[in-house]
View 1 (cartoon, rainbow, N blue to C red):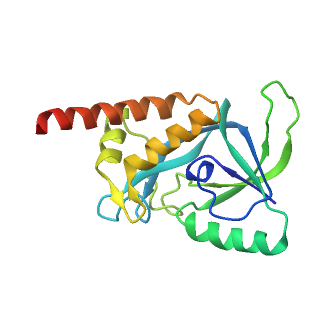
View 2: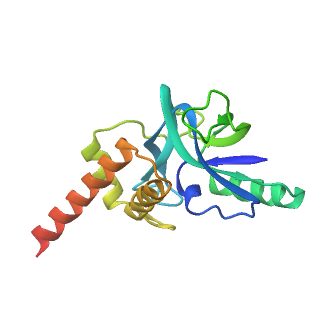
Length: 187
């Protein structure tokens, strides 16, 4: 069994695995459109976490985890079903490690996606301006910590695996600008 992580799973798997590969999936992009009322926000003030949005021709970099032992598979699925409970869809995708390859390195990699269907996913927030998303992330905090910590850890993890993600970098820079401005006005 393989699981693809494109958010916090990149830096914090939380389950036993046999192998971890850095790579990407095609025709999706990472976006901060999912509301988090259980980890990085509250029902009163949701944070924002990433989900995947179909985007023909684009790629989303992350990490794929191989889980071989039966007991590890079962405990990983149990763990992920709780951790990713606000993500209403599972997809099985092709995973690539080489940008020039025409065939995937691994087929059938499981990935959790938060769909934009408000009936199935009441926490979906959808698109907003970069500034509005950044403001929400800067202010939100939940049981797993401040939402901005998630943003900055994801930015660091993506840089460490050697990829560029314009939406992520622009959002992190905007959040830093807002934090710096708030610091200046409070001193």
